[in-house]
Amino acid sequence: MSGAQGDRIAQRFAELEAAGRAGLVVFVTAGDPEPETASELLARLPEAGADIIEIGMPFSDPMADGPAIQASSLRALKAGQNMIKTLAAVRRFREKDGETPIVLMGYYNPIYIYGNDRFLADAKAAGADGLIIVDLPPEEDQELCLPARDAGLHFIRLATPTTDAKRLKKVLTNTSGFIYYVSITGITGTRAPDADAVSARIADLRAATDLPLAVGFGIRTPDQAAAIARVADAAVVGSAVVERIREGLDAEGRPGAGLVADTLELVRDLADAVRAARQPETA
Image (cartoon, rainbow, N blue to C red; front, side, top):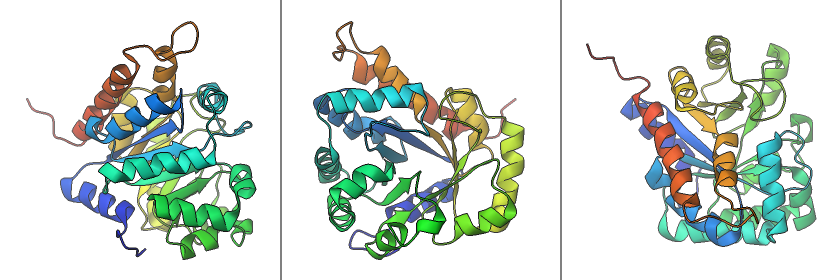
């Protein structure tokens, strides 16, 4: 996909392939726990090892998300986060980082309310690279997917353990950037993925597409991230990160002094594990 700034997602996966390793995709919710802290954390994620950043667009009814990410959305909304502020956060990030891919992830309702054409134009201008909209199926591609791609934004699809070959063909139609494989059935962050089952499914997906494969839902620990990084092109971690943010809040829900540092420490641990996953063991 072309654009003035090039295709950051394709470039990042090419860099990862050249380095012989998988990437770490980190999910945070825009404005969580409040805008100032969220902005600092977002700006520092790349230095901690995030290769791609997914920014959740807060929504009051995030049906595919588990308790941790649901709570992060509610914290952000309570602190006044909205789509205008979310896109402004992407713009601020881009002022200092022109290389790290940004994917906006969420649900269609806030985009529809904002206005599809306005959203696509503003997201592109802010510096976003792609979208993951979990409640828009391929049958609705005319609604947002095709206009997004025309606007220069990747439209990234989810595949799941229950996606059969016929459905996968439909899912892959008009998909670009990468495929996000949901490693468990159910909502985010509730169960750990089975690495062997994921490996088998990844083989099936590779036979069906040349797009990079990122695996998420349920990856919470460095060991789990490393297991996924051995077979996929990227490991996605979200619930564990937003849960670490929650743990850094005081009794009144205000950010504690160590919240950003503690969250970045987790990201570094995950990144170190992902980077080491394919290295040969030394005697």
